[in-house]
Length: 425
Ligand SMILES: *Cc1c(COP(=O)(O)O)cnc(C)c1O
Image (cartoon, rainbow, N blue to C red):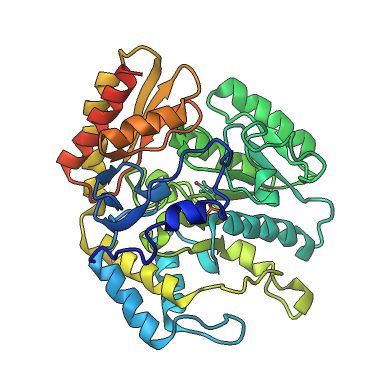
């Protein structure tokens, strides 16, 4: 797509006085970099500079930007049905997407509820888990067990299941529902402690929620299939639902198509978003097992799931998602993820000896350099932009989650920039 000249050359400075940016102290935040075009793994700025994108716009653009197949699908959908309400009206893209997603997921995960953002998908999962008990006549089981280091979103309900520090629990005390937050059970000892907690509080609990294999926004903290197998066994022992938040891990990021497929551990509910549309449009899905759905299947209208966003199942977004799934079917995306993994592991090794670096690790198409101290984000980002790359550190973490289509030379520019900028910071 050709870069279009902005109609008003001063749009950035004028609009900057009117917008409110994410997680930003507006008084001190740097002026954002003005983007006029995107293509593949490249972001083109207004002054002509080109940045290689290391994080695929918060993990969404898994096929790179402006993929022609997705663009064509959205364009065609725009000509027929851009959007109609989901209550009482149906369109093929959403119904087809529900069928395709549930076919790709392990047995039992058979009902897709569409929303427009990851946080809302998690809210819906929580509501499903709570209403599941009510519909079965079980009283008092409305709490969720989650883990330190977790990130499940920014809305009120999802903040309550995030890491208590990162999730701003003290800031919003009194507003957030109180959940049960435990350490992720990485060894026998922590598993025993978790089991004891669950045993004591089982009468209040309805579900366990976890990001399988990687706690993403909470610090890119990895764990393995054994942890998930233990959580599945624990959930079964105490009749809890197991929710996998695969909003970050889904669609090849950890090397398999979904962490639940890769590990062979099947949850009762799974949430998807981020790369679901290949980064083109906002969309999320909460996918429930037959077991969960059956508790809502009734002649009693009061047993219906009580949720319904205005833009639910948006047809443009579903068309984009179907096109993205076409690409996963026809292109070697998982092989590309494995190749990225190897290259990240090899090239980020050079950061290991650097001053201020605590750890270097990779999992699937995720490369992490963990620092001793919280990253000085603004300064690092200026350094990265000077090197022609787009990387946005958070907490102690400098990380790469590139498009799965990134070229090896582009990836080398990213890993090289991290080593150079950290070495000179
Ligand atoms: C990003 C993310 C969310 C929240 O998604 P939004 O679309 O930002 O609301 C929830 N869970 C996980 C694991 C995520 O990575």
